[in-house]
View 1 (tube, rainbow, N blue to C red):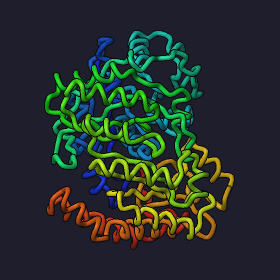
View 2 (view 1 turned 120 degrees about the horizontal axis):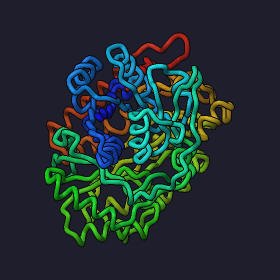
View 3 (view 1 turned 180 degrees about the vertical axis):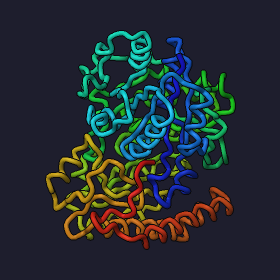
Length: 488
């Protein structure tokens, strides 16, 4: 039995900023590596095709399928990439009679709707399915009853059926380590501050987050946060060092890696003790880090950290539900910057109850935060499963949804408005804010000093081109959604 797992292209969802995104955020598909490891353990030959890393368009994927002749195909998708996943499935169906299973966060969030709206997919699987996917494939291969597979979505007599929710409480420590050998690891290069370019890999120590941020769907995806033991984390890091010595940098993709500070401290203490030699970066919230923990993280190899700032307006920040305040944010940045760590931060504009004054406070806050090296200025996007989507659909705080499709661009576009601010207004404000943040001497000099002139030139040119290209794109006449690009 041969299985091909496909990660569709995704950079398109960043619009004209896709070139910059590739420089700053090009990550291997860790979820597919987990699935491949579990399927291989059950005797299923598994291959992974990362279309973005390979530079494969749909025609190239079809050629690859012809060459490898898989018995089953799995496609992963997030909400912004559902359009591209659908396009890939359509072309596969035109050329082959291979069952296609779709999975990923988007499927978990919308359930059987994914098959009702997309006839190209034969099956869908919700939630984490490292153990259920190989079981399902074996049942299907043997022609046995698939209705015993929890979380499976399929068609029967023209009706879309969603099986009972998965009932097994899978401990994160029991899942096989990701099969990174299924990828061309050398493709995933990452610039590390103070070090230079390194081969990097993504890594998870936890799944889910109990925080109540209105824009996040993690509490729907993971009603119960799953934490790996520090010992299990270290074993995987040792496994990487032994089996993939070319990997030198770890990108922790936990939503909040210091969610439990004592646990995080132990992980980073063990990393230092074992002298693994990795550099790493991570993301967390401002009120879950202190001097002692930050110092240990730096001793273990921390080079870059991202905090979710969200807003510079105290009332909007409180409404977001992250549980942080302006003082928490300032303190966290001062702590890590004093230790020589490069910093990133993300904010959102266009949230319910926003206006020009609240957005101006956010822009002023990030431009005045001298410890912030890189800022990501996002426009509120109502992803399925979020409180934010319910708020916008209800018109709360003067918000309005202008486009209800799921194929939403991540950058340079907007699907919402708030008060007198239409989607095109928010896009222009976003572009202006990016220019105000990055076109300052302090930020330009930081990029040149930390990256070198050549890298800085490419990065800054990309920012400027991305801004000017998007600023002058025509607004869609029917819904105000700027140059919508389906898929990713």
